[in-house]
Length: 276
Figure (cartoon, one colour):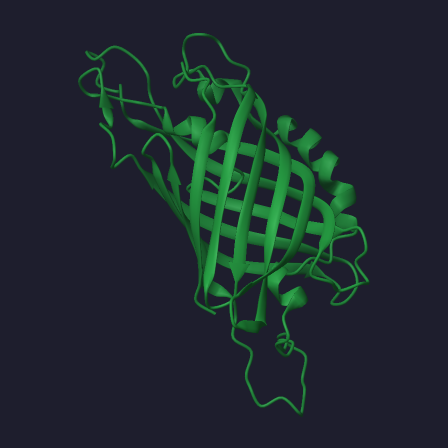
């Protein structure tokens, strides 16, 4: 677990000042939600917990499709003061648009190229993420801030080896830590003829690092040897308008990539959904 400490130390100052809620709720004209445990005699609506209310579907340029749902989003700390945002995701991936088997019965680990550099990937993903706006007291549509994300997740690879080995191609689940930080810009976005429902158009650039245990990867990437530390950057944009659209497009590029023969940029197009 030593390799998670640099990631946690890097983002700990961000958590100390994080009071981040979902982006659209900061600028919408809707009435504030009622937090659990806080009574309000003038409120007639009951609080509805955020359980399985949002998620996303990713389409990658190599044909991979990722689907993930946010199980729950919490804030740990003091309401209105110090609070740490915490989200739990659960996702699956499928190479349904390409041949999943390589070299007979041996499965490819190419899906890990996308999983390592995408902070929201993983069979189970426990994340703390948010945006620290540079002028947090002024609620405006056009704002800039610092974007951060850190997570511990479970990724899945397949054992590499000769076809004659019965264990070749069997799934291997392993822990991976990821951290990302960068600059964020947003401005208003709305549908023509409906300026009351104002959402956001955003643009973000991040630098991403991830780390896995060396022993965990020796059966997945036997040659060349790897220390499990990879990093790269991403540029992305998106449009979020309540009850209308929530899409994003992101380009990833490794600076140090896993031991897989692929150095081209990764393009991701996502459809986010919300059931709340």
